[in-house]
Length: 317
Ligand code: A3P
Image 1 (cartoon, rainbow, N blue to C red):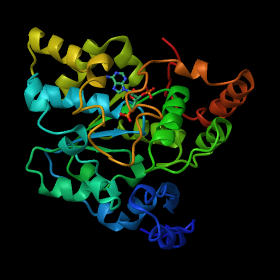
Image 2: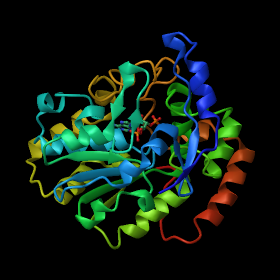
Image 3: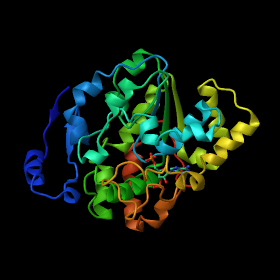
Image 4: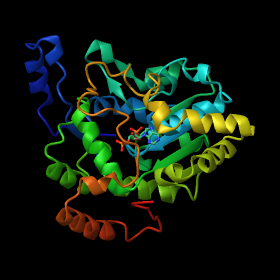
């Protein structure tokens, strides 16, 4: 697979050499990989990502960024560890579940290779990806791996992504709120179009072993959705363990859990004082962000982009 250079990365790299450590984190630009914008380091190692060899007992958690990935990861780990909170604290989310395509060489404190981590991990592995289904390494479907996909309504997903761009220097500068809304609507953001992402995976679920979940359903009734995940993973949970998982994967508890709230990873890259990773964790925060005019424009565009799918989202509960 080819990727096309669409920025001045090498120029930026030259400039970087003159800067002091705290200034060396230069926001990544986006490169086009088969029509999908990906962060430059990922595009650079794309051939290796594409050739990744999944194993039949791998579990993959796939999402558009900011749809509730970390939450789902914690739920899955707690199910796999039968509710043992100490075992779930063995490492941070980021290291417990390799982030398949993520690659970061600089700064050294934030070095990460999802591929290396995954390859070194004994089976059974659980991994995470934000790739749209057409860029998923083919071995996952060939091996019939279990895949859990979580989707979140476009407006809340956009709001969360905007704040995440502000605090995460591993992503491009979001620009103003108005500019970011435009970028999101046109798919000029990392991992591309939200619309294509949710629709692509929705279509794939009819043919493959994919459990398709919604953030809004998880908020409405976490116990019910956790049970769905447990069933998909073929795990029997006692009522006591189930209740323990509901409690420990609540927003409030996860926000205080350093092994799940990203305060121990991405050092020098994520600045939680700008916006914490565990920000609000609610449905319909978009109402605090969209102007009436932005909302109207967004809705009109949404209707067109989503007219060819049976997929329905709840924008509020
Ligand atoms: P907000 O920015 O709207 O608060 P991801 O893990 O895919 O990056 O998604 C992050 C979003 O999920 C953030 O949304 C975060 O607060 C929310 N989130 C994380 N854990 C959660 C939980 N236990 N319950 C509800 N939302 C959670």
